Length: 133
Image 1: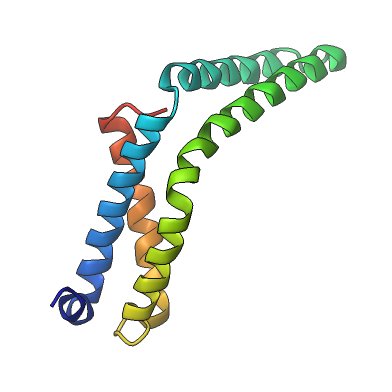
Image 2 (image 1 turned 90 degrees about the horizontal axis):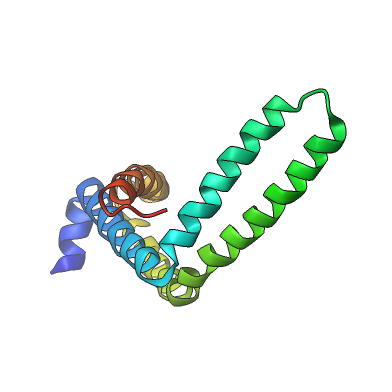
């Protein structure tokens, strides 16, 4: 029944599916990451960008600041990978299933674009709503 509805309403169903998956991913990210530390790291990166702009003539100071920022980026990436451990395999299986459903529908090869655009927009919204770094 769900599959038939998805095939008969491909645009609506892929948008709703993307919205739901993004919601779940956002909640998992919030749950399994240290939000306080991630916000600190993002603030430090922003401050580092300001320092770089201020030290345009001082090559040595720019390099030191970039090195600091690289450390922040690496730690931020480490925190961001944690939720991926829980979601990577289920998402692969889900995409394989979705592709099978929409391959024969009217949105055939373009379903991924509907998914991506909806996912990006809803991710921005959910991250603001749930205050996720």
